[in-house]
Length: 249
Image (tube, rainbow, N blue to C red; front, side):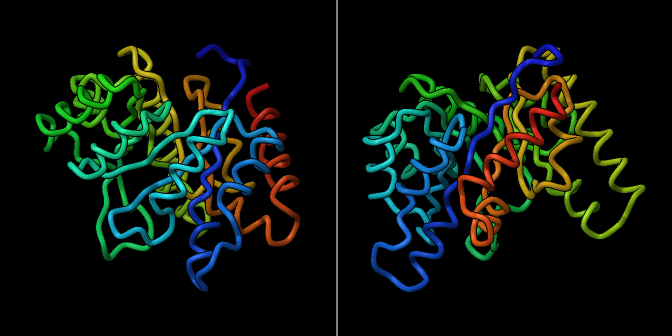
């Protein structure tokens, strides 16, 4: 992706559903959040249908698919159940992520190198359904190479380590994490992969990632939903969009 080109923003609306489910009922509505995000400049909407349905539920996916005019990025574990759901709905994109029942949020990237045969089968079936498939991985050469061999068109680099190091004031680790992301973004692009990034990004961490020229999309959710409590979802997204555009320019 050439320097200066537009960087896409995918807004993850999972935690609107978390808030809804905390009390039950229909408020706040993830679809309304997705529509507000679209109006505020989001280029796509991300939703993770977890196996335990702790936030997004099946009906949310159906409503999002029916109502959105921007692409839906369907985050999913590589299970037979999720594969059937994805093949039925045929979202624009499917992002395969690791999933553990006990985790609060996605921890780390997929071990593509250790599960390449199974993941390649899942990728092939999703692509056959018309989905653009991405794999959520750490910035690791072996994982990038394995992802390319599965036939996936896209990787999403896990930025959580970089964000954690920044939040904890570990400057050397922050620099090392950023260097690794930079190197693997360039390497993945050289292999013909489209490169996305996400996890833990906020206003104080987005600019160094957005400035990496090979990255074409950032997916950001929890921070934006939290910031929306104080300034509203539209303004929260508009500020993120401004910072991304400034970094890319």
